[in-house]
Each structure stands twice: as C-alpha cells, then as structure tokens.
Image (tube, helix red, strand yellow):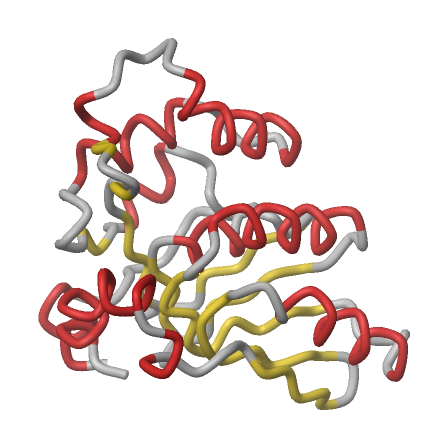
Amino acid sequence: MKAYAILTGLAVLTACAEQYTPVSFVAQGDQIIATGTIDHTTLDAFEEVIAQNPQAKTLVLQQIEGSVDDDANVIFSRVVHQNGMTTVVPSDGLVASGGTDLFLAGNTRVLQPGACVGVHSWSGGGLVATELPEDDPEHDRYLDYFEDIGVDEEFYWFTLEAAPADDMHWMTAAEANRFDMTDRAAPRLGSATACDER
C-alpha cells in the first residue's frame, strides 16, 4: 500500500472494514514476518503463529500501515513486549501510526537503512488530540502503554505535533536517535519521497 493511500484512507479504515487487510504472519526460521493493518484479530493470529513457532523471537514488520483499533493495538503490542521479541523494520519495510507504536514494543529494536517510520496525531469520536489538555484522560491509553514498554512519554507528545491525523511525518535518523528508538544509532531512514511511494 502506498503511503498516500495510507493517508487518504485513515478515516476510511476506521469506518469501513472492507478497506483494509488485517495483519497476517508468516514464519521463516526464527523470524515472523508481519504485513497488514492491526485490528481485533491480530493478537489471536500472533499467538497462533507463536504457538506453532516457539523458536521465533524476531518480528519483522514488513508493512504495518497502522491500526483500526487503538485498544487492540496496545494490547497486542504489550504481548509482543512481554514475549521478549526483537522488532525489525527492514530496508524495504514501512511502519506508520500504530505500526510505529508496535515497533517500539520490541525489547530489541532494529531499523535497517532505508526503513520508513511514520508518525502523526490522532483524532476520532469528535476528539482531536492536539486540542485536548495534556492531563486529559484520553491521552492515558498511549501514555500508559509507552510507560509499560519503557519509552519516554515525550515521544507521544512529539507524534501529536509532527503531523495532523490526516497526514504523516516520516521520521529522520536524528529523530529516531532523539527518542532512542533503536539499540544502536539509527541509520539513514527512508526519505519522505521514498516512503510516499512505498
């Protein structure tokens, strides 16, 4: 899915289940390759593939455009973290929105050169994140999640300001390093142009 389709389809994903493909998992040796959009079925599918491939400890996020259910996303991502998984975005891979939150669940996190990492604000149910005070309980779903996985809450506030809910900001290596997104210094990430075409 090209990034422009991700951007124009964010609202559609939430409203119309037919417009997205749920995450699927494929085991390859000690890795599990994930592609699709996170929804209420993702955790069950993940637990099934882990049960069949207990040796797999690396979750390769090939193309995770986001989620249509933020609650399901943080529940699933916590399980990834609790399982001690390494998360990887390959050189030709892309994570965006809830997919980036999932990447951060890795106990070890790897961004390969050219990987695309997208962030933006959120809106829904008549709420716009940037219009809410910082102590509004609507933020707690995300703040509690980042605390649980050991990510500085400043990353959350950064995402809200990086781009509005109907747009996407493609992170730079400097930004990834600022928030300790990887265990080693992040390589050069995919350019906005490249990520828009991916």
